[in-house]
Amino acid sequence: MTACAIETTAEDGDHEGTAVRPPAGFAITANGAYAARLAGSGDALYAERWTLDGPEPYAVPLPLDQPEEPDAQLLPLADGRVLVCRRVDGRRHTFSLLYPTGPGTGELRLGSVEAPGPGPVELLPPSPDGICAYARHIGPESTTLWLVAGGAFGPERVAELPGRCAGGVWLDRTGRILALDRRLGDGPVKTVAVDLERGGEVSPLLQITEASDDRLLLADPDSGLLLIRSDAPSPGHERLGWGVLGSLLPVRFPDCLRLDDAAVTPFAVQPGQVLMPESCGVALRIDAAAGSWVGLWRPSGRRMHQVAAPPGWVAGAGAWSPEGVLRLPCSTQELPCALAGLSVPEEPGPEPGPGPEGHAGDGDGVARPRACRPVPLQQAPLTDRKPAG
Image (cartoon, rainbow, N blue to C red):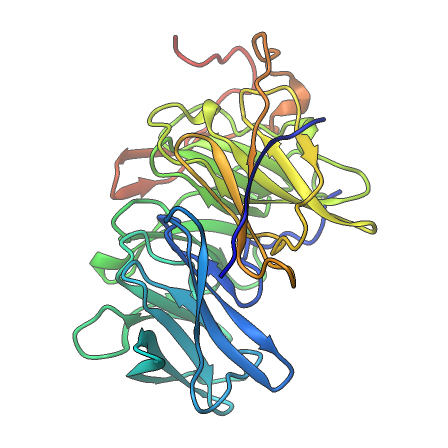
């Protein structure tokens, strides 16, 4: 397929607080090598795999004799296969791996799971190991996690957690520690860390204030940067903030990430910035009445740079290179598989010192003594705290 690569430099509201989710029918592997989406139209939908790590992006259609339903969920794996989750009836979901084979499509059936209640089984974001895939079902009082690909005997239940758990953010590079946003009963939402190698053992992760709704949207294991949505700084009105995994400094809520007439949602963080969370590029989707466009920001920066979305952007999808180029998948009639590149402009001068508007009242840091064991936040004073060095 024809592809384009556009390199450009960017120029110069709150909404219902939910964890960041990929666009319907589109997902990218954790290493950015492959993507998958539902292609086609009407009653002729099929899975399509994109290869993103070559000289030019290209797409491979993976049609079967039976078209896919609009609610089919896709997840690419690091070996180029595509996992598809299909809802067969009100309770049963089946899983298969699709792969190109000569002129056709091969299908490896993995099995199915039964989900009690009306809610669907949902695939979690691609695991960092690129091999395993997980799914979640939210019941009335508990949430069940399944390993649906990468196991030895087909889908298997790995944990059942009290409460209703939404979201899903990986905190390490091995696919062991998963962060979920949990609500117990009528209480506030708090992010917890789930250890999948210890039977789903749960540790508190975000507790900015006792009554605040605190959700983790994105995390970068290399730098420890966390992107958070919380109503701690302004009860009843959620704001975007950032913190650092393992830091005792308060979570910051920059004014530049708050737009009065648009919703701002982060969707990608630059990897490879080891121990330098302030230097990570962050990509944000901005949605308003006029449409959707892109925000580019670094924690060390003074402002969020806004840039028009490239033609055909799959809104809310993209991945950073370690070198700081944001690659956005695009699809138009002329260019059905393409990538557009953006970079964050450099800003001279130091970042202004933190003020009251940049922190939550009684803000907390995130403490984790080692990579695999997150622990609850510790109270951190609001003022007179500066990063070491």
